[in-house]
Every structure is written in C-alpha cells, then in structure tokens.
Amino acid sequence: MRGSTAGLSTGLSAGLIAVLSAAPPALGGTPPANPNCLGVVTAQRAVANHDIGEHASSQDEPRLGLGNVAEEVVGDGTHVGEFGAFLGEIDGDPATHCP
Image (tube, one colour):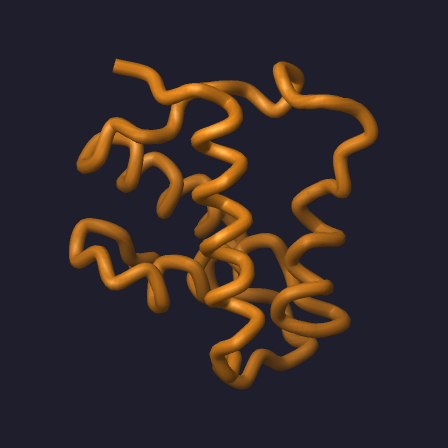
C-alpha cells in the first residue's frame, strides 16, 4: 500500500529535522567505500518497510537534488553514497545498512 506524497513529504521533513539536530559522523573528502550506498539503503528500506515507492518526478518542481541535500545535511563535499551510509546509520532500522 502506497502512502500519499504529502505523507511521505511530512515524514521526510521530520526525518531531515532530526538529522539536522544530530551530530553527523565524520566524513572525509575521499571517495566513499560504496558509492552506491544510497541505492542500497533505499532498496533495503523499501523491501523491509514498504514505505518508499514514488519517483522524484512525481514531486513538485524544482527539486533540491540528492547531492545538494547530502551537502546541506552532512556537510560540503559529501558524496551521495556517504549520505546513504549516514541515513542507514541514523534511521534506527536494523534492516538498513551499507555493507
């Protein structure tokens, strides 16, 4: 069962507020060990929780973009893969992690 876009947006907004309130782990400027980590963590969450399912194109324009969100939340120079690892660490869900 898919949730509404408004519900998903509200959940993501609440999650970003929590992320911005937490101290981010140290991330360097080196390439991430797994540059595909955001996709891995997103797929794990989709399978485990069934709460992800609408493509970004269904959202209003303009969108900020994942790279910009990663830098805004975690810090300048953050790779999208590092952002995925960060989200997998802080979401409290044992089903999501970046190997």
